[in-house]
Length: 220
Image (cartoon, rainbow, N blue to C red; front, side, top):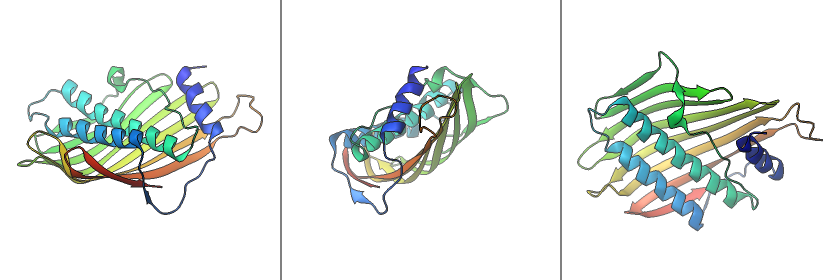
């Protein structure tokens, strides 16, 4: 079986599926490090030149998606003692579907596109306003990652809202929030695993920057 599938299934079958109500502050070095990576990759995206080519846009957008994935994995590990980081195909190497939208004018980024290959598919829906002096991001970023092979269907969604995420002159996230809702939805039919039918795991993690490289994190 593909290693990414096996790793993801190990996590899903070992974890009690569900979500807790309410949010609480999270004090965990791994989650904090991952949250800072969201700020760093978002800063790079915010600094994309207005005349950037599509390859640069794809690299910067998918880098943010990877940092969100790392934050979700860290949050899962915090919420479940046996959490595991599921490997993924590199979206930057995948073919883009025809007719999709990638638009950037230096202040407004719109992406509605799918990159994929057999068994993997990444769909991005991004609508972000990029401010200047100082640089800032407001808007929404969603990535859906789907695996389908050998009787396994896994859907992975990250939906993020940027709320006045603002960067200092050095490009460091210094204020504002990023609110991330994530979910795994899996069907394990056809694998011959007794009692394995799949399920849903989901949660929310909120990263608030209060100064350069300083974050307060809460979640469910």
